[in-house]
Image (cartoon, rainbow, N blue to C red; front, top):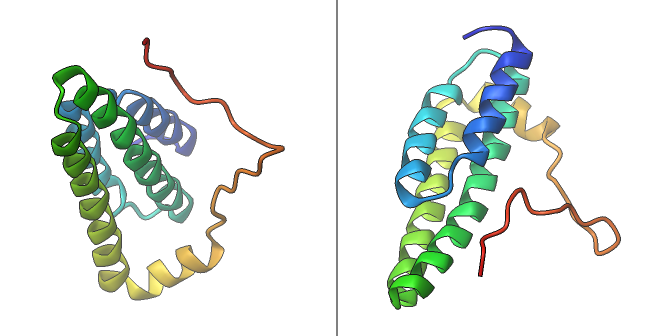
Amino acid sequence: MGPSFTRQIKLDILTMSALDPDSISAVLQEFRAYIRHHDKAFVQSTIRAVGKIVELAQLVHDKRGKELNSIEIEQKKAATVALNCLYGVKTFVASRSKQALHIIENWQPCRISSANKFPAPFEFPD
């Protein structure tokens, strides 16, 4: 799969390309292979990227719901993405208990305080 910096760049590019429901699905499918990688730092980055995709899915489906006047349906689709990702991470933890426990013990979640807000990776036009 290449050197670690190449894997990280590809992970970032894929995460930022999840701008519609089809690409979200394709990116998450790609991440299923990444989560099985032997590099623990890369697996941690992949799990963080899955979380970012869940947040992006909410934005994508909210925008789509407004465009199609089907907000409730799109919210359910975003919730389905989130639940599927949660199930995937739970399954990963159950199947790789030793490795997963090490990853979880050393994982530092991204916390955003009101004084330290990160800009969104993109903004949808109104």
